[in-house]
Image (cartoon, rainbow, N blue to C red; front, top):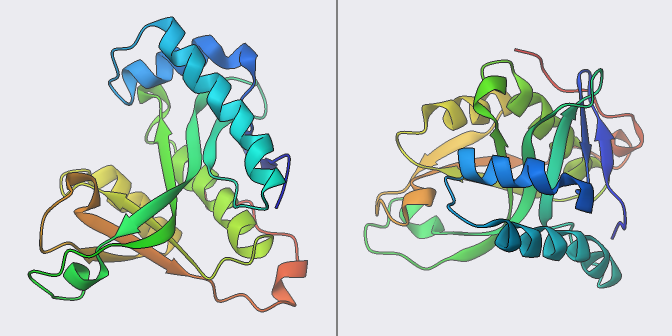
Length: 200
C-alpha cells in the first residue's frame, strides 16, 4: 500500500524507525512497555520492524508497525504510535455474556515516555495517524483497546472521537475497553489535507 510513512502535525513528526533508533527503542520498551530485555533482543525487534515496512508494502498490506514520534522543533523522541492487527470480541461488547468469538480489525495504539505525558502528544500523534488511515488508506473503521484502569488511554479515545465499548467478559485484559471510530469521509473529503489534530 505504501512503502514509506512520514506524517507531521502541529508539533510532532511521525516516522518509520531506523537502526539509529536502537537506544531510544530500548529505553521506551523498558520504561513504557516494562519489558526486561537485553539490547540484542531489542535489536532483533527493531530489525524486524524496519523489514516489515518494506515487506508489508510489497504485499499491498496495511502498514502494520510501530512508528517513532518526535518533536518537530527539536527532533527529540517522545514516544510511539502504531497500526496493529487487533482481534475484537464483538459479541461480548454487544451484550453476549458468553460470546467470546473474535473478529479481526485494524487497531491503533499509542504510548508516550513518562516525561512527555499530559501534553496532548498522544492525541495529536494518534489523530495524525487516523487522518492517514481514513484519508489515504480509506479504512472503514479503526479500533483501539485498553484496560479498565488505563484512564489516560480512555481519555485519548474520547478526544479522538471514539465510541467506547466495555467487554463484559473482562478478558483478555488488554481488550477490556474498546474504542471504535468509523470513517465518515467521502471520497471528495479525502482529497483535502488532513488536520494536524487537536491540542490539549
